[in-house]
Image (cartoon, rainbow, N blue to C red; front, side, top):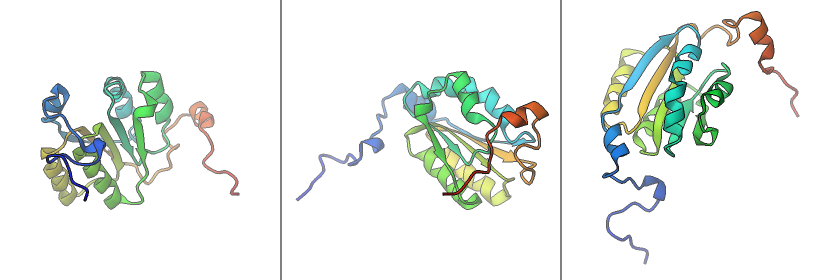
Length: 170
């Protein structure tokens, strides 16, 4: 028969050292929400230095449903360890919030950034409740002009440097 030693979980990804100073530091983590008109480009640029330092601590930086704003190059230029970035593509708003909730409370992430349409009162309340048990910093980027195409806010030269969204299907 398979028995556990003590009360520790089986999966090492779930092991958390409660005496770790980083764990104590993350106890007061919050979930912030910002509205953007640049699809989060400016907000991500401002956070990139902090994300770089968090990525060197060995935990995940989780990006949930990011739009095509050149985030990979932006994070690489800031010094973020790209092998510590976890990219999640959610199919809808419900799945986006669920993924954010799980990433915030898992204990394996240091920052969780989610892109979504504007949140209603129920979703804001849900995030407030999740923030009480969050073990990572959470940021919800509410895209004010989400109905516009991702390249609409770019100037002419920058739009031509972005990879094409269309390709051949095999």
